[in-house]
Length: 330
Image 1 (tube, helix red, strand yellow):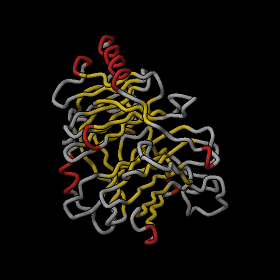
Image 2 (image 1 turned 30 degrees about the horizontal axis):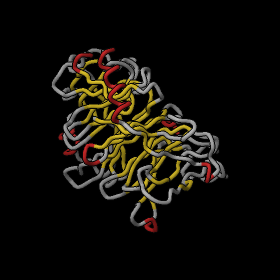
Image 3 (image 1 turned 180 degrees about the vertical axis):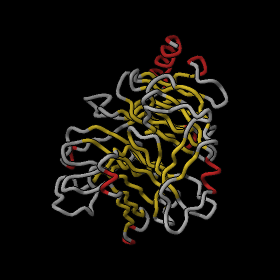
């Protein structure tokens, strides 16, 4: 493992140039941490942690020409209204260029909510789904991932994860309702304690990772896409037999990502490393390939077209250049 890490570092030094990154001082943000990035062509939507801003739109660092940014959240000037974007936890963009924004509980007793806006027709308004306050008091929302494939009825659905919970939420845009995907191992042994907070999905696969014990599960994505939401909404979707327990990852995972060959990439924040695992093999260390070990706080892996990929760091990789991104070879 150590030899692979060293080789990856050497290869990264030779082949992985830095990408220009985000300098938000022009909009009054000096110190911030990047939590998550969603891309739509040359537009980057940054979920950040700062004193009074949580969502910013900026240019993707590779964009040639004028670099710009603007604040989208209303964290600093919310006065009693719960309509704005506050305490943004994460975003995703669906196949029809709609921006999905997951907001946590904010000040003024505002409940967590999901906000959906069109990037192509911003004047068409937005969709908001507010989570029940009674449930929100016991829930810590973490991330949102939109299924890139429509359901059998044409519906667009999104997976929402929480900390310290044994279920994943599934939201139906067509029915404007939400249900629970709650499951057990096939041998019926207990999964607790568990925190199903990391999820990734592509055309063929859906993985959920437990960040307490590093366990990895595969869910039957084709069956979920055929699942029909009744008209009166869904309170709970119980799944017991079709969930596959794959084993334990190499450590606490973050930024789960599936490439175009269905390989699973994830971040080991403890080591500042990105590793890749091929489905069908056991999850032993020898079946992982180290893509990068940077030593910085890597939070996410972004895959582009033509095999391009970037590692996103929460803090500046270089304080002098104010860079957050590192190009990698996957």
